[in-house]
Image 1 (cartoon, rainbow, N blue to C red):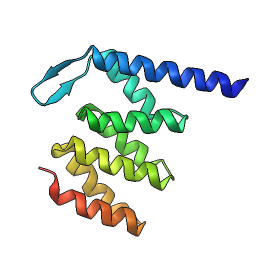
Image 2: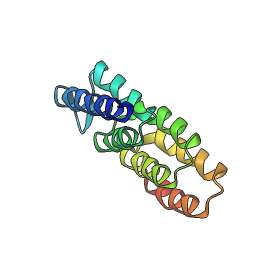
Image 3: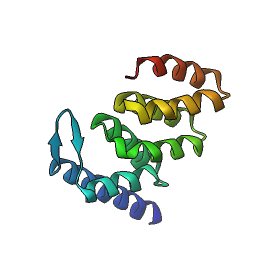
Length: 128
């Protein structure tokens, strides 16, 4: 019963986020999310549900949400899943910009996992 409630809550959160994204306005190449969509995205990045968390991390990169970068950094530092950490690195690459590059520099210095460190080292110079 509890799993069903969690799945329902995750589905509702994902739907609210998607609706929020579709109603957002675009500015230049990067999207400017409305406040509710941004709050939902950040809530999803910090979710305990892995599926919701991964989806929100992915959508942060797809829509180049620079406001999510500090939350992605926090999620990277507090997550032990290698697949999610790789997804966060990819998302930071897709978002780009000075803030993402700064976060990648910090990760490059602190990271001990060889695979993640190599990925970060490959991504860092490519960000403008």
